[in-house]
Amino acid sequence: MKEKFIPALDFPLLTKLFDSFISFAIPERRIKGDLMDFMNITEEDKILDFGCGTGTLLILGKQKHPEAHFEGIDIDPKILEIAKRKIEKQKLDISVVEYDGGKLPQGNNSINKAMTSLMMHHLSTDKKLKAMQEIFRVLVTGGEFYIADFGMQKNPIFILIGNIAAKFEPELKANFTGCLPKLLADAGFKNVQTLNTYNTKLGTICIYSGQKVV
Image 1 (tube, rainbow, N blue to C red):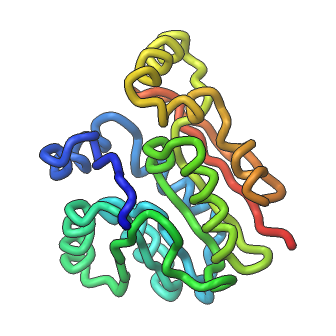
Image 2 (image 1 turned 45 degrees about the horizontal axis):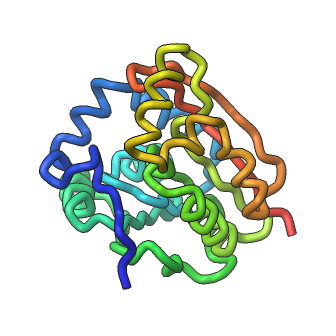
């Protein structure tokens, strides 16, 4: 059975506005460009974008590293249609797949690197952990997982806003209290790091990484 999910911008009717809103609210190209640089992608890498949304990160990655294999998954069919149109327009060889929110369709030890951008905050804390455990499963030994998402808030205004938002959308609480690194460690990842932080119109966004060491 498919898991319930929160659509982009929380409401299905706003999905088509997602790209425009994100470009206005955060330095998207900078954050995603930095994320791609941190990943040190090689041409042999197989890369999974977990919760790929409209495909912006996948497209950026494939354009920068055309020899690497990129694939994306998302639970939201409406946002995947946008991703497919964007990928087709760019004439890029990227596969995107709808999944049910449970076990990932990828096999054990089949992915070199995984990434996700502004998706984890939509998941409850227990689902965040389960998603990280699934990503750990599909990564090869030595594989790495990179997350760009809301972290512990630094600005007092956003601390207040975050506390209020968490009452209406409790999924945000783990992000705003800085729990993602701990959840990565709980899922089995080693060498967990905070690679960068960004103050944006929506609050503090961080890039985290962890490695599968077995």
